[in-house]
Image 1 (cartoon, rainbow, N blue to C red):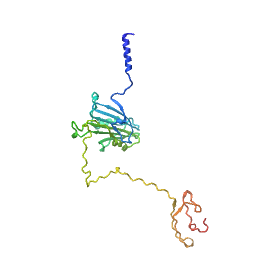
Image 2: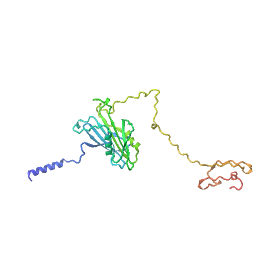
Image 3: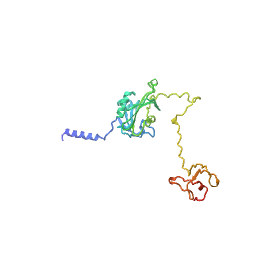
Image 4: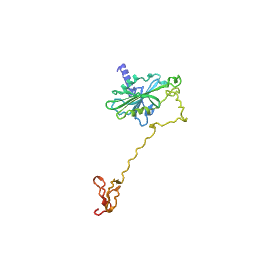
Amino acid sequence: MTGVAMLAAAALLAGCAARDGVRLPAANRIVSESEALIVPAAGGPAVVDVVQRDYSNAVEQKVSLFTSSTIPGQNYLSIQMYGPMEATLDGQSRLGFRPVHVSRLSSEMRQQIPGVAMRTSPLYLQNQYGSFGYAFGRSAAGDACLYGWQQLRARDDERTLFQNRGNIQVRARLCDSDADERELLAVMYGYTINGTFEPQGWNPYGPPRPVDPTLGEDSSPILPAATELSTRAPRPAAAPGRVQRVAIEREAQSGEGGQPLRPVVAVPSPVAGTAPAAPGGAVVVPAPGCVYGAAGCN
């Protein structure tokens, strides 16, 4: 074997020895559910997996949720958190910031929920983090779909170079063959954001809002909302009585012996020595003469 062939064989062996299995791209990695930056409310859709990608200026996660739908695609909650990342990520790409815009949202919905005509809700809604928007639609098969969005960012007059910096973008894609609009919308009200950045200047929520000045004052009643009170429990069904009540009209004539007839208001269940029951369970009321033990009655 020539020297060139020996060098080629050695290089080939070295290359084979360096292979240690398939790896996921460094940009994306699966993390545990306990590391999820956004999670649905307890009792909400189950978390399937969490995929994270780190940028030099942000972190992005897609939390996949249990899906029961004929619409192609996976339900999820996604979050993008812009803030100061580790110095080791300086060489990574940057995540561009794009504010919420109607045209961009329409493109997102067509991509994420194909084949379903989505209608943007005109309602102004708020969850615990502030205002949010959503669109809802139904497929030809009857599947309910919701696409929700929310941007968390301090107001322009509250942002400075050192305080109230940062931004959070949230998206929700939900399709279900058995749910309705209210049930899917509950996910937008119930999710929790768990992550944060260590620097104190990072605060996309803005400063705390002032307390209502009427709180604790007289002549300022605070009433509970109708949804905050329990409703009246249904009354249990009455147990069937042991005595069958029978209405009998009072007859004009008198009974034997000139005694006036007394109306029978209740007849107990048939026992030995009494009048038999009619077919179907109805009670047969004895004739007036038999009520008082007249001759000829059994």
